[in-house]
Length: 206
Image (cartoon, rainbow, N blue to C red; front, side, top):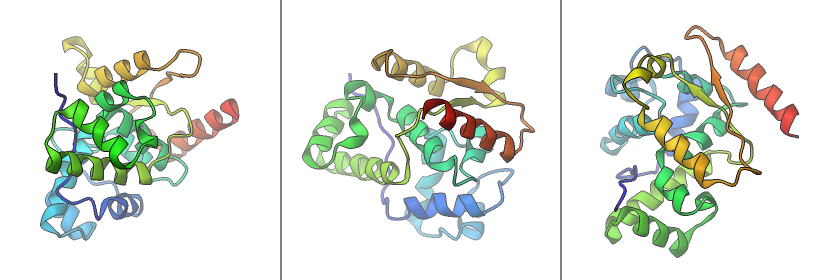
């Protein structure tokens, strides 16, 4: 069964988006106005960043930044957090090939077409978006799944899409090489708290 994968009409400003997120204040809501006025991304195609950030788990359905969005604010955590988000958003791709982020060209296009069942045009869009995200991310370190407080409130009604995808990824990896670390933080946690956690992880897995 074909699995839909996130894509952008144009991936030209992907790295610019995450660079500007790092320097700008965390908004109450990530809106088109914030994207255009505060981040300066005014191109019509840039509007696709909002559903992309939602698919990556950095904002919720209402546009409110999640706890993982705050990890994008620090150079020490941004790339690792994005790498984890990519693995979750593109879970079907990593289920088919756990090294999907290392592929390029026809091999990656073939994998995308196989998983998504897309035509040539859509395959190119998905592949271009995936490649742009991979270039901005870091997959070299094990990264924790930081739960958003709102996700915790929804646990009684079932797992969220992100949690389900994370579980699938964990099953597809070999146990001896995969670390599944879950860290639950209060909603008022500061950036220093996140930095201390990642620093501790680096020391542990060096």
